[in-house]
Image (cartoon, rainbow, N blue to C red; front, side, top):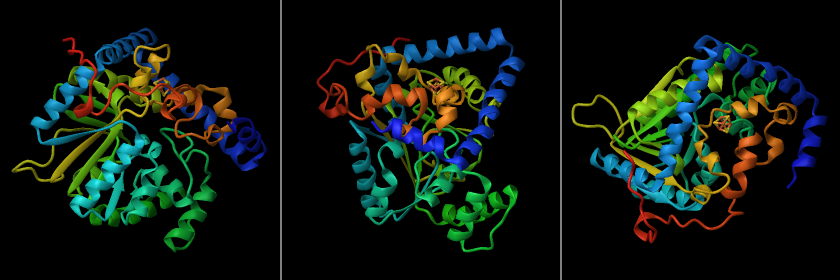
Length: 368
Ligand code: SF4
């Protein structure tokens, strides 16, 4: 609703405009180079194969979700269903109260941004600490992410240096490597003292009940293995049928997002720590959030559900490149966010896919 005035503010912000000009080339060029290296025809085939995988999952979404739940439960993960983000928030707070959790380290979870989870945790005496470097920076700044894979893309080095000096109460640094090292030192203490790890999930694999996460900083592994409780919060549309499907999608995601052949870290999390495991949480929960997604199934915007959150549409969008992510006023900016927002915000018909125990609708069998 405030896009025009936000955009006008962004256009008049000299510092933001200078940052956005530098951002323009990076991701776009890296994706183009990766596409060329893979072979343009082969890459297009890979995209088509990925779209077909997503369509197959979405055509029987309820069935694959129940299959995921069954397999995850078999391996010791507890699956919880949230009709909306308020539900998800309540479930996390209940788990915190039940397990006596006081500090949460988080790796990037856009659904937790949708839910305003950090504010809710803090209000209930649980300290949330973002551990993705970009998310950590914007948490210190008290801001929302401006890009789904590069949340602090709107900040320059000087702003980060000022933030760190103020919050870390250390001498101001001026070198990016040193700033990163300082963040690493600060975060290490949080990893070791947290009792809760909260992650998102790039994909949910139905055949094994696994949560797959793709990161470049290693924080995802610390979050999901060190604290005694791990909660993964993700949207219901993230489910895919098989590990083979995961392998295909994992070839297209990093190339589209950052131009990498593969991300630095790729984790498949299947259940809590078992006897004989050297690490891992004592308890693992997955919260599956509808949040308007089921309202898109079978409708004219159903292709929005294919989204693998690579961020490429933002990187290539001339509007995004000119005004940045905050102008959109929503967790998901750019073309993808503008399309999905009405459903996420509840400006759509109510979901018929209630939490499973309340579900009155038919369940489609997974097509194998
Ligand atoms: S909609 Fe945007 S973020 Fe989603 S898969 Fe397509 S390009 Fe990537």
